[in-house]
Amino acid sequence: MRVFIKERALTPSWDLVRPSVALLRKNIWPTIYLSFLPILAMTVGSVMIDERNLRASIPGIIIVLVSIIWYFLTYPGFTYMQAKAARGKVLTPMESFKKGLPRFWQLIGMSLLSSLLIFVGLLAFIVPGLILLRAFYLAPYYVVDRKLGPIEALKRSYEDSKPVTGWIWGIIGVELVFGLIAGLFGRIPVIGYLFAIILSYPYIFAPALRYSEIVHKTKIPNVER
Image (tube, rainbow, N blue to C red; front, side, top):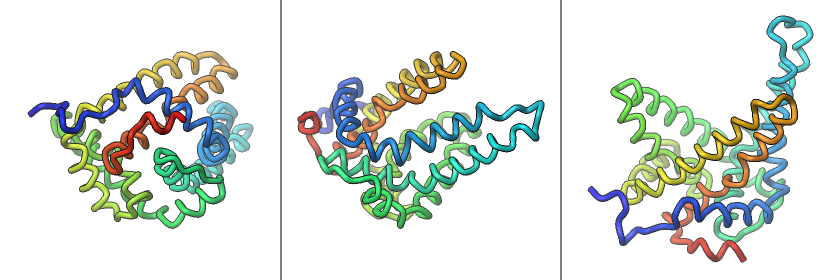
């Protein structure tokens, strides 16, 4: 089976960096409120936790717990905003939040189910888990954009990603590169954590762009205007 098929040739994964950055600029405020701030708060809280002094760590623990709740509540809105942004629509933070929130439980259910299946697959000779990781990679967009239930979203993501397996792995590979670079900066005390978070965002819209290419047949060059 060929991984890259001529009929489904998509944008090379590294070529998605520029349009992703362009979308980040256009949608900077929704990205900050719905994704960056909760992750930043989570990081700050984690730094404040001292395993040797639990009492002094209470503020940090509270910040981490609040930021986790914040992240999960805004995650559907952020995912919805990404899916729309990939097709040229610009939403406000509140508009994105309101549109995504009704899909909260479906998205959480899908995430738990996919994580369980991938974990079981990794235990079963590793390869099945990697296949499912690729197959379910774009499933969140099916939940919030196509309004599918958890199981149906996983099925559609699995089916639609089959003809473009290599292009999905390409996205994952580039994300790993950005993650490694961010990890190097993260080793620098205090300021390094901030740089590590920031470096994870230039490619943040790439999965939504790939989803839009596959499902909505979007032409990527259009988003750079």
